[in-house]
Image (cartoon, rainbow, N blue to C red; front, side, top):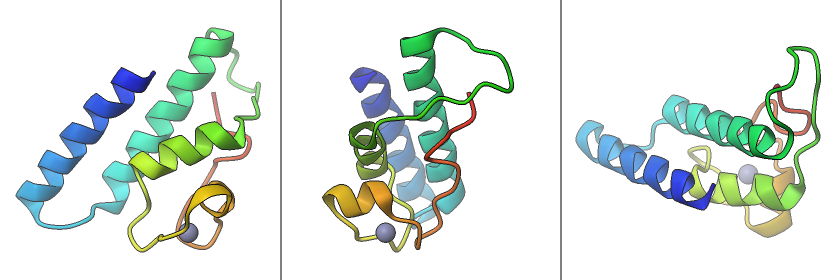
Length: 94
Ligand SMILES: [Zn+2]
């Protein structure tokens, strides 16, 4: 998990350096990938319509690594932020 997150973050930072700025869509894609990895690690691959609640501490870790551009929320406020472009975090798709 942790290693995946760091590799993904490194790739993102290199890409942002090349393209010159914070990229909302790749960050969103990275968060989504990490949510999926987390759920798969805990539950295996579930059916398409099954939802799993991801703990706030995990959401916070993933958002800290891949914050939405413009979001400066910290800690629990970051995990619960709904104002800066996060989607699909509470009952993330598997
Ligand atoms: Zn925020």
